[in-house]
Length: 137
Image 1: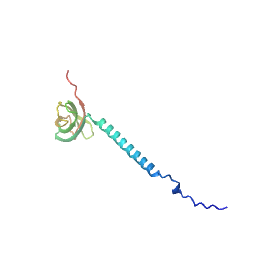
Image 2 (image 1 turned 135 degrees about the vertical axis):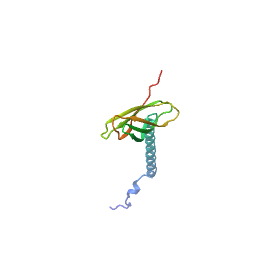
Image 3 (image 1 turned 90 degrees about the vertical axis):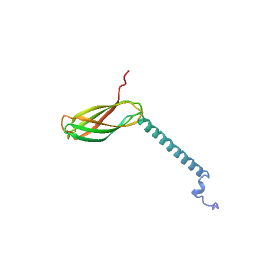
Image 4 (image 1 turned 45 degrees about the vertical axis):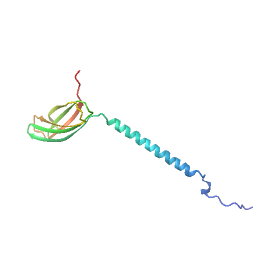
C-alpha cells in the first residue's frame, strides 16, 4: 500500500504562536537587563555618595625646604575635613607632612593650597589622606 499523504515539513510542525512566544522572551530579556542595569546604577551611586574624594591638582618645589601643594577636595556640604599633605624625596621617602583643616561650609568642592616645610629636598607633594574632622561638643 502506498500513502497518499503529502510529506510533512518542519515548518508546518511549529505552532502558530511561535512568534508570540519569541516576542515574549525578548520582552522578558529586555526587561530583565533593564532591571539589572537599574540595580547596578543604584549600587554605584549609593557606594560613592557622601564619601570624601581628593586629588592633588599641582605641586611646586619652592625651595630646598618647602613644597607648595594645591589639591581639590570633594565632600558632603557642611562637613569639616582634615587632609594630610606629604612631601616626598626621590626615593619616595617622607621628608615633610602637614595636616590642613578645611572648615565646614556649603561648598561641596573646595580647592586649597598649603606649603609643607621639609627636612630634606623634596621632589613632589601629594595628598596622603583626608578624614572628617572631629566636631567639638
